[in-house]
Length: 111
Length: 115
Image (cartoon, rainbow over all chains, first blue to last red; front, side):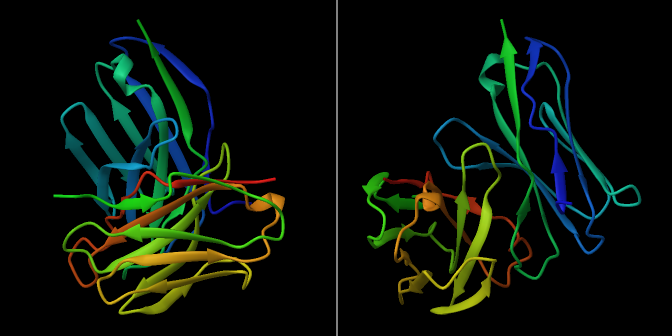
């Protein structure tokens, strides 16, 4: 079993829809949770960064962490075609340690 | 403010050859990590360099080695290339000791193809 599980998709939604992306994990030592966006043939771009449990909002993006369920989510409101990309969840135990990534979910927002 | 820069962007090698990939971290960052991303997969941690020393290592064989220079730039070397080494190699930088040292900033990567 992988430490971090993420549905690879693809996920296709109409423009303006609310998108929900999720990851589950097994390592209870994870303290830092991140979401990266990756366009084709580019490096990952940090979208959201959260420490421990709770919600964090930044514009159209909301990240949620539920450590009791070992479940994290990313919500995208009013999705745009420019949001079409692969979304990677990533986690760390802290102390500058390595990131453990999910496989990524491919999202397509259609006009 | 320049972000993380990597070179070359693409590289084609044959089995058994050796390759060197290069990375310059984001301004103000002192820690460099390398990740391997196979097609359709998330990045996998190779190793991390800080103060010119390898600090952490993932589950990669000794054919993968690295170096960090006094100016914080870094190289990744892979010897005796295998077909399975074909992947996107990503460099990420961060600042050690900061309150957000888990925030990694990635370069665009080097696409390595082994034939």
